Length: 125
Image (cartoon, rainbow, N blue to C red; front, side, top):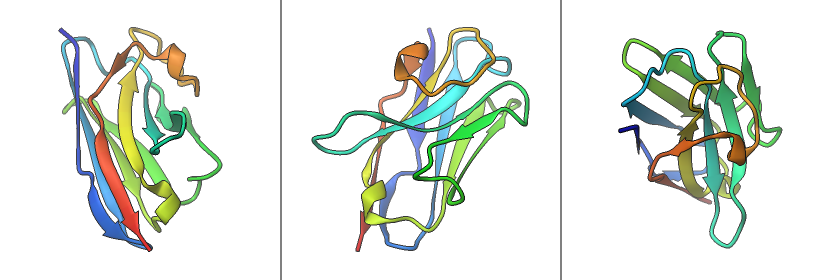
């Protein structure tokens, strides 16, 4: 049974930082792409960042580039999203997702087979 469990969300003031974690279990983790998406209230889910098997295989949405950093620890089967210089528009439920077996990261939600339950991030102005 594949499980993804996000943690680290919360309430932070604009300009602050949070680090989200996504702990994976159930299937081989080290060789597959993992991504973060977010969904603000009343809006569609949007891509945030993705990381592939290779360390240099990383994509970011333009809206978070330079502020967010995605990384992975394959020993712990965990992916992180370090979020700095947070803005009120970053407020959303953040989800991590993984592909079944493909190592290449992509930006489409439909490319990812397994999803976590989400963690709320709220940035106050």
